[in-house]
Length: 240
Image: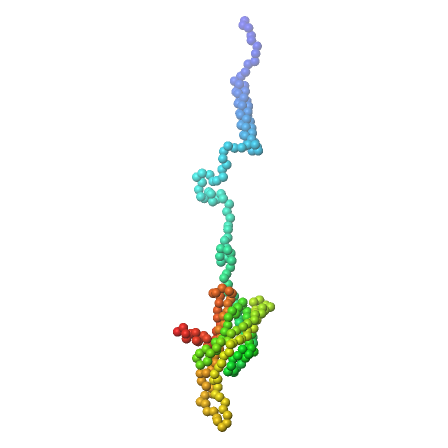
């Protein structure tokens, strides 16, 4: 008889099960190594001591369209308000009208035949002015029989008012002496009597042509004049 060998016998089904277990174990090891390596690399990149050799990307990606750039950038609204000029000032504005008002005055209704310095000492005109107007010159041409027979000059004293730009101007007069002809018929004594075709002698009336120079400020283009109606008619006639 032949010799009998001892041992354990393995079937084909048992072999297939063993191979399946081995494959599962290998796949688990590969997956564990892959996940662990990724976590390690990420931690290393985020550590303070890590520096990248690649340049930082600060602009839009190459080939990006305008629509992409507009959508990527933050937007804000700016309102520009133009206020009359680039410096932001407003204007120009006009002001209300000022005034030069005669408060009181004295000169005689009937002129003496001799206008002397002493005679003119009692004449005056007081003005109330609002608006910053300044008197800088003034004179009076005395006309008789179609010609200037003398001049009267103005002096003034200026007093500031208590409110805003109000001022009081006190004007007086002086002259070197003016001699006038009478436009009245003479007095006659008995046994004579006067016969006259008119109430007064025609064309011997006396006219005062008042010329005053003013300024708003010291600039030449801010000057103006105030004249009498008779002066205006003479100036108009001279320019025709």
